[in-house]
Length: 164
Image (cartoon, rainbow, N blue to C red; front, side):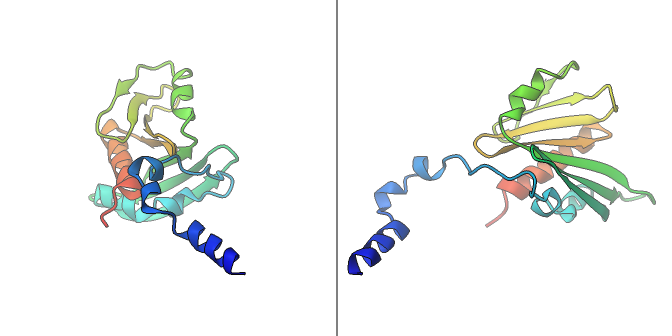
């Protein structure tokens, strides 16, 4: 019995030497995209704040390989909401998706481990793909490049740069 308690205590409190930054900053466990609610992970209020607007509605959607949230925000000076979309996908999709984008890509600085933007000729929206190695990639979409960047910045802040 005492041996079991000691083993449990040792497992719960590993020696300080094993808590080095290199070991604790490893990859995150895989996400279950079928149950991930992007609208809860990145609340609509965070996106509304990025535009100084008012949240009108959020619409979550999940699939086995990605999750998405559509945010409807009423920006200042407008009566009707604009839609912004956030997809969260496995990090491996970041490079894989590049192979299927025919439009020119623009590399963006200051967004985690890598980011690029393009304007989708199919729907005319600006799309920014952002990679956080070992965690996820996300796609922020909007009607303008500036708006897509605001969404991307809000997502990065919400997921990884929150104040303590």
